Image (cartoon, rainbow, N blue to C red; front, side, top):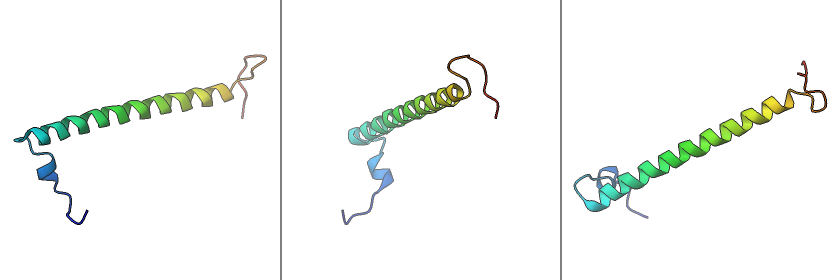
Length: 62
């Protein structure tokens, strides 16, 4: 790994390998956004669940 990463060479739109790398990067970013949205929604549901009393279903103040 003595060579430096060349962005223009890795994502070159003229070559088949470069276009494949762009497609892979696109799918990876879509997957990352999906996971982040799922994690955010799960944490929001947990926070909302902690604000309610389980037995009486009333909001807990404070």
